[in-house]
Amino acid sequence: MSHQHSVYHHQPDIITPSRESRVAKPAKTRIGTWFRRLAMLAVVATVVGLIVYAILPKPVGVDLGTVERGSLRVTVDEDGHTRIKEQYVVSAPLSGRLLRIGLDVGDEVVAGETPIARIEPTDPELLDPRAQAQSEARVKAAEARLKQAATQLERAKASMDFAESELARIRNLRERGAATPSQVDEEEMKFRTTTEDFRASKFAEEIAQFELQLEQAALLRTQGATDSSNDHETDASSGNNGQFVIMAPISGRVLKLEQESATIVTPGTQLMQLGDPRDLEVVVDVLSRDAVRIEPGDKAELDQWGGDTPLRATVRLVEPSGFTKISALGVEEQRVNVILDLDDAPEDRSTLGDNFRVEAHIIVWEEPTVLKVSNSGLFRHEGAWSVFRINNEHARLQPIELGHQNSLESEVLSGLEEGNLIVLHPSDQVTDGVEVFER
Image (cartoon, rainbow, N blue to C red; front, side, top):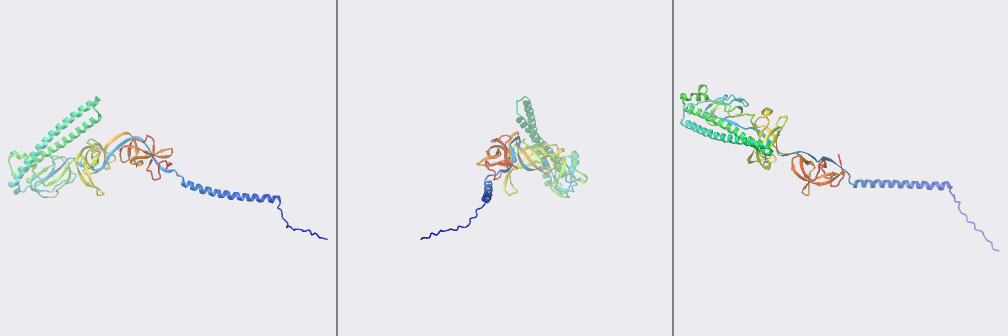
């Protein structure tokens, strides 16, 4: 009899979680997983955003300027100095002992009235035949200078009269519309120039007359003449004790004393310089390349002379010969003197004297209304002048054509319009198409 054995497999107890535990545990897990994923995505997005922000071009802060219409003036700016137009150097007409001069620099003198120097005679020299011959030669030279000065005076007067008539004719034509303003200005300048020439020639003639009288008086003293016919002329230049008195040849002031103490002088020894400080002109040395742009009649302004307002001046002469001057940097420069006449009355510049420094701005071109742009926005690009023009908050490279320029502004002939905004002082960050904002 077979026995069947039942096999009983013992299985461990399986604890089955409840429904609540089966649902709760997976929910927490999913929340934690999504939280971690979101955190990682946020970190990644932040990093990517920072990278993109660093890579993307950012707006550049710039200074802006406006293209506008207004006056534009082109000037030649240089330092200059004042000088008295007519200076006279008083010299000893004969040998003798010069007494101490009692005048000081700045003292006023009146022509023919103020004694400026006294010379005591030394008889052996005054009666010396050679001294007499020299005095006679100086008299003849003075007579020749007087004749030459008189001829130049007549020529200058004729030129002035002709210029005056031409100016009146041009003004009449201008009133009828048959002449241009530039023609009137040209004739006015010619009249002004010839008037100055006439004044200078008249001054030279007066000086030549005075020198002749002085040499004639010296000759009389040398000859020891006592002719009664010459008493008046001799007394005019003689003082007490036979002193030879030199009177002031012009009215003005003492500019410089060459001899002040008592000393022995010979003919031609310089004693002092005289001049009228109210009769000033200005000398400005400019570069030769600038001098070719300056013409007689051009206007100028003078500042830094010590007054509150600039002085007005007019170019009278551009000297035809230049000279070499070493600049402060040690560079040789060819320069030319330009002579200016002061237009303001002497009363408005009474403190201005001889050899005073001024800053001159000679106007070589001027227009009241032009399209202009600041020079701080200009730069060279591919051989042409260009600017960065603002278009929809972006900088756009804009080639332009320029006309006249000064140190601050330039005339715009093409490429820009009134009211356009441009970038001033563009840096390396400003390129074509870059976004900008005004700082």
